[in-house]
Length: 62
Image 1: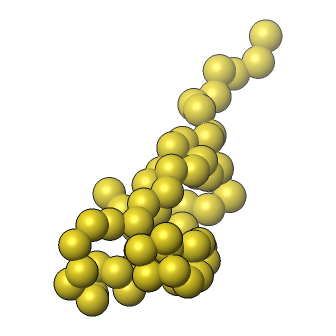
Image 2 (image 1 turned 60 degrees about the vertical axis):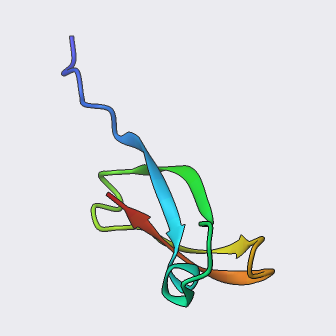
């Protein structure tokens, strides 16, 4: 029939950039999914950091 395509959706880990730079212990990480075809570059979202108690930029790692 049709081609078998690779899985377009993959799991990614988002890590807080501000928390990493501050040197405080612990990390703020979120797990989400993205479509590799639509967003081939690294994902960058604003998420809540419970340690810093504010919304910060989280970037995709690995």
